[in-house]
Length: 524
Image (cartoon, rainbow, N blue to C red):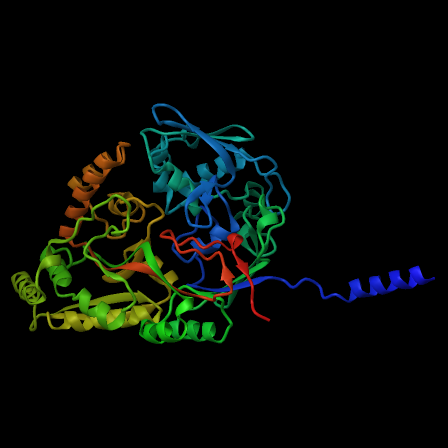
């Protein structure tokens, strides 16, 4: 009887214990992603979410360094033209369906099909027949991406490409669930129908409000994933996101109002994270539209813009004034700076006035144009400052505040005069920037077409010796910087606020902060 009583007490105590609490990470995002289809997604707002939902052959570790993902090993032929990746055993999609090398190869093939209209297909133009297939000039079956068996992905190149592993770790190379894509078309990315292969799966998406991910029990490393739920809150207003962080509603935010930096350093210094990244903030100039088809007008715009003053007054958070397109943190590369970089500001203004006068513009004949930027307070302040600087030169910038999706549309359709843009290179290599400006590249939104620049980049992309590549790319960048089809503003730094109770948020230049490597230990 006593034993029965003891067992009853023990059972009662077990039942009375609270259920283990769900571990949640609440973080800010930018605007809603344009798509959650790896092959169709674009922009920096999609990347953090896709990196949680999917894993490619290669991925990044807790410190942002490249490591194996779906693959467990690889081989490369002596001439560097054939790569084979061997997959892990027992891989599954989030719905339990087996994931094989044929799924991975199909997704990479899909990336290159013209009908997919993938913005990042150019990352794989070194693949045998990659460019012709993407342009619709060769049959899809001629593409050098195959799966000889269920565990092997074979990639044949037309020329050596030392950046192939980095390209394979980007979100565009992540696999899409063929069985769902063929069944549902574009609807496969909707909550309730979504299937992924990463640490998390899409649970809910309320546009403009919240995007929720839940832990994927079929992820190959699920036993080491401690965070159960990740919430992304799209927030355009930096003051709003900052206040939500201070109120404890958000555990990590990707930006904050620059004017708050002094308060932050004084009051919450342990939550401040600032580190270099591979990103650049710049303006696109539509050089096909008069008067911007005149290099004198474009150069005058670049000359009259005081980057240092703007950064000192508005962005005093470690960002670097940009006179190059390539980030100075790219390993082993010496950036090519525009020749105007070392001119005193007074000389630059005088030269800008001279160029405008020669082109027939000035106070009595102003240049009126639309300056477009996506909705965010920091972008607005930068646009207002540039409008003021350019006004003295005879430029009348009419500011247009729009959502990022519309800004993206304007870039793709060339429906703009001058517009704010940004790029975070997926590669720690100068080609991750410069290839965007090659003639025919889908991301060449200024339709830049300099034959000498193209020739240098084509040569750099066809050799494997990194020192030779860097020399060629620096020559190409110097040509680009003297054509003034873009106006670099600043090189980004990672500017985050992260609660001290989060472990595993490790700063890295690729800006990959994966929840699968983190733990959240909120104080009681």
